[in-house]
Structures are given as C-alpha cells and as structure tokens.
Length: 98
Image (cartoon, rainbow, N blue to C red; front, side):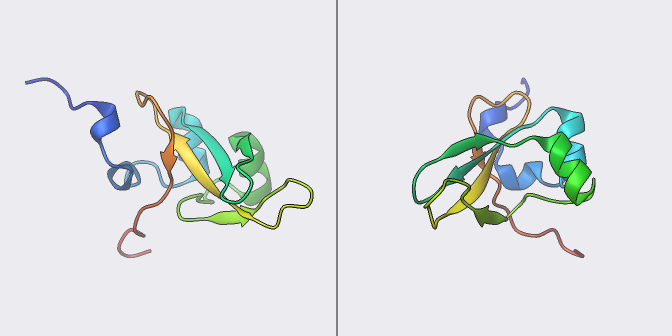
C-alpha cells in the first residue's frame, strides 16, 4: 500500500503540522487571497507577513478587506501545501487548547 494522495488529505489535518505563517514559509506552502465579492486574486508574501505580524501569526480562518479600490468585500485565504495540485481555503477548526 502506498502513500495517500496529497489532494485527498483534508486541510483540517494539515493544520496540525502547519499552524503559523513561519511554518508555512519553512514548509514551502503557496498562499493566496481571493475576494469573495470581486474575485481579486493576489499572492500572499509570507516573508512580509512574518516581518509585519510576527512568525507566530496564523492565516487559518481569517478574512481581511479587499485591496481593490472601490470594493467593499472581504478576502479569504487559500493555500497549496507541497504535493497539492490546487489551492484550498484555510478553513479548519481551532485546535484544542488554543
């Protein structure tokens, strides 16, 4: 029996090994933000997030204002872990004890 297909592993399981932006950066995750209103898609610079928010900051279950001028929507974060073929929402229950 081989290893499981990386795209079949739910994101909530990936959260246990990769909670912070520093861990995402070290493990090679590709993160993007997508506006739920206008559809603006932007790549997230994890190095910049670490420098501004700190290495222990988490993007899981977070939303932020859209950066497009005139758009009043919110963006959600999506990520692609190493071995995955597409981005999925960073949406998972908070780990117990946090």
